[in-house]
Image 1 (cartoon, rainbow, N blue to C red):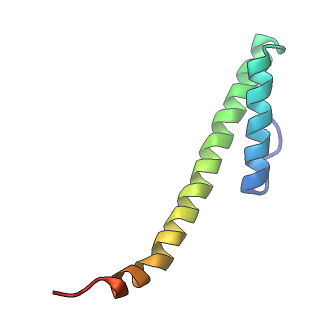
Image 2 (image 1 turned 90 degrees about the horizontal axis):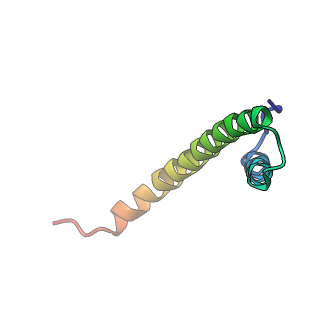
Length: 72
């Protein structure tokens, strides 16, 4: 398996490469299985990064949203 990417962008780019290789059908089954496992790990890692970013944005915008809400 390849070295883990250091950033979201690197992980996403590697995932694109893995998917393109798998879709080409140009690798033997054993290599395809390795690539599939790598792709699954990359997809999970990208999702973790995106979830973290989403949580950060929601946390940062929460005070602004509550300040805009009228109190009853």
